Image (tube, rainbow, N blue to C red):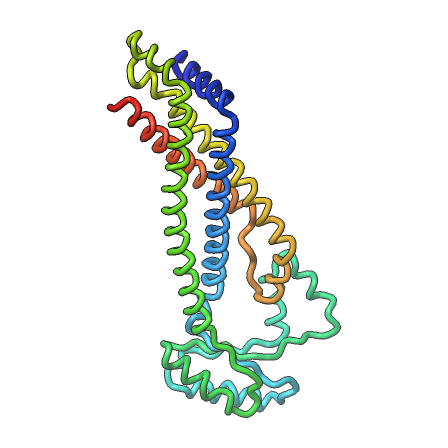
Length: 296
C-alpha cells in the first residue's frame, strides 16, 4: 500500500516543480477533448433526430384542406386506398393531431393549450410497402380533390442518415488525430521532467532501483494529466451544451417536434469516455517517454 502512495507523492511533487509544463499539457489536451466532445454531442443529437422520425420512413402524410366536407374527406381516403402499394390508410382528426403534438412536446406541451383555435388540419396517414409506393402516393395525392399538402419524410431521413454517418466518420478521424497529438504532448512533457531529474534518476539506478520503480511516478503523472484534462473537458462541454440548449432547445422542440438529448445524460457518457481516453493517453505517452530514457 505504501508504494502507490509514494508514486503519487512523487508524481505530484514533480508536477509541482514543473507547473508551467504540466499546465500547458493539460490545457492543450483539454482543448482537444473539448473539440471531440462537441463532435460527439452533434452526432448524438442528429442520430437521435433521425431515429425519432424513422418511424415515418414508409409513411406519407396527406393533409386535407380546411373546411372540406365529410364527403370530400372520405373520398380522399377512398382514392388513397386504391393506390398500388398502400397497405393502410388511417384518418387523423385535427384534435387527435393536436394531442399527439402535445405529447411530442413533452413538458412544453402546455404552450399549445392557449391557442385561440386548433391550426392543424385533418389528415390521412398512409402506410406504404416500399419506396416506389411512397413516391407514387406523394406524386398522385396532390391531384386529388380536397388535398392541401403532402409530406413525405424518406428523402429527409436519408439525408440525415448521410449527415450522421459523415459526422461519425469525422469524429473517428478527429479522435484518432487528437489522441495521437495528445500522446505526443504527454510524452514530451514527461521527457522534459525526466531531463530535469536526470541526475536524481541516475543515482537511483546506481543504488539499485528497478526500472519500474523509476518509471511509476512518471506514469502516474501522465494519468493525472489525463484525468484532469478529462474533468475540465467534460465540464466545459457540459457548460457549452447547456447554454446551447437554453438558447435554442425549446425552439427546436417546437419547430421539429423532437427533443434534444438531455445534457445530464450526455455528460455521464462523456465523462466515462474522456476518462478512458485521458488515462490511456497518459499511460501510453509517459511509458513511451520513460522507455526511451531507460532504454528498456
